Image (cartoon, rainbow, N blue to C red; front, side, top):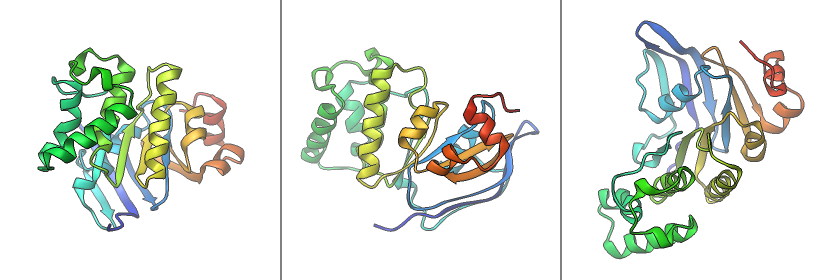
Length: 234
């Protein structure tokens, strides 16, 4: 498998309606992760994820992969997106797009239904699932194609502790299996549990990049220290 990383953002600037949303900012992501992106609301976390995934156009600057293959990216949004189809059809859909043989689709769908605890709901409309079940389905649908990179935008926002624990277990398994995770979160407990390294966004720029252990024990800047204490950082 071709190594896609490092991923380099150089002087990336994004404007919307004449307003600077992020940048100009720089970031280099190495092959190893997970990388967790933190920062105050409005700091640019979602936009920088969308830029890396290629679904946000940059106004200026460059986004460069070691070897880019868009078919190896997947993205999970904060509000889970499910198709107006059954649970099993949601899982099968990305495999049908790449013309996977039917026996392989069935095997993969059965595996993921069991893994996310939705085997009994396989023929139920996905729109009837709870918020946590929808997010598990969205993550499983992203992982069923075995992407090299999975971007996640606060996937556990507004979920209870039980659903959060299940989703974190899914993500830890995916990371252990070789999927590179790049994820934003507002939950510092979650960041501590999942992160190998932290990217701290502030005012639309990458303010600090640190190993997670060092960031939590010896934050490099007063702004990061204040944010980790729970202070309002503006």
